[in-house]
Length: 264
Image 1 (tube, rainbow, N blue to C red):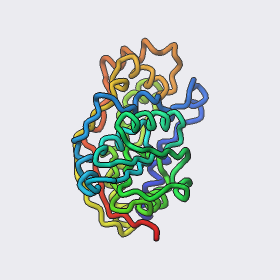
Image 2: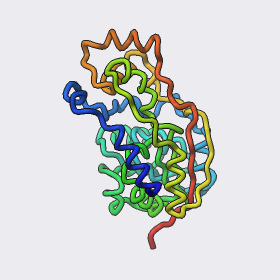
Image 3: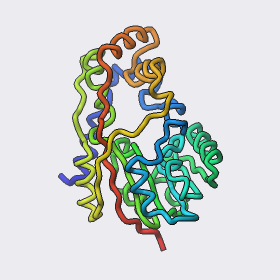
Image 4: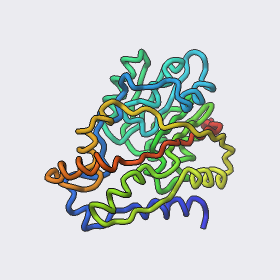
């Protein structure tokens, strides 16, 4: 089995049983835009931003942010970046991205759709960033290839060391008696890059700051209900659980950087 096939197989194991999804009041895969908005918690000096900034031109640089959310990855690079391009499937996320770019004084463009399907409509940028998206992508090789093809200088990709939903695995066991997978990991992603012949640099960094909304206790309960496919009538029960067993998020994130290969 190839590294890419192993990546896809491990991701498929995260699918939820039908009897669980049938009881969900909302899609467990959706996110509240506020959790990804740019606010005062944004740290422009985290390692991922430093790595990306090291290859950006001093003036006039451009950043393409895939799965941009509210723009936290891209706006951490303004300046020196002066133009930011956001790609996301959510129109609400793209609206937040545009607002953040305006506040940062950067020119912006947004493209609504799924990567790499919209790659053909997406301009080349100096640096392509992609934070916390890879674990959502089963067919990882064309995704990576399209990132590389739109980067003039480099691609900077960030993902947690382990699957982000691993933090909820004990809760799935508690509420549903459901055992969750353990892979893939950032090592599996590195294996895919190596298999593709991509010579990527790799660093580890602490978990970056979250938007203020993401750390609000009430929002944590709301997000947990959605994530765990629990109805609103279980809010008090989940709040008690979270008080005693707070999800243990991956403290270490992996930063990859590899050369771009812009189309001619």
